[in-house]
Length: 134
Image (tube, rainbow, N blue to C red; front, side, top):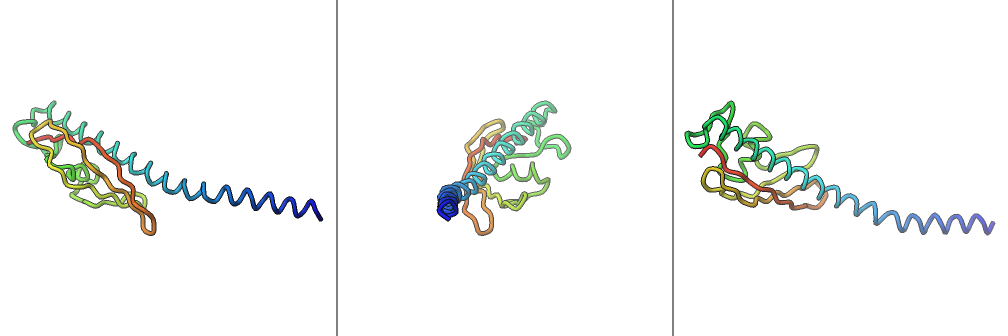
């Protein structure tokens, strides 16, 4: 009987230690998702700028098939989704990009992305926006 009580106490202690860690993983997962999407947006804007520069559209204006005009951080969502969408949703997470003007062609700025889930908290990540085609 004493062994059974000791096993139950040990299981209780393990549960008390494991549950808070499980909830910490949820917040960390949201932060990691936000950082991953921020990296994707930085890459999409950089590749778009490279396409504009390579095709000569960097000063002559955007071309729909090779170069999209990017003058604001929110245009990064258009690069990913193919249509203007802010906020946009991926895999149950809603991402909202804070509007920030990027300036002249090739200039960069720090952009802010907020990731949120229904019933959960919100996490903020930053990415580099690159203007193109203006």
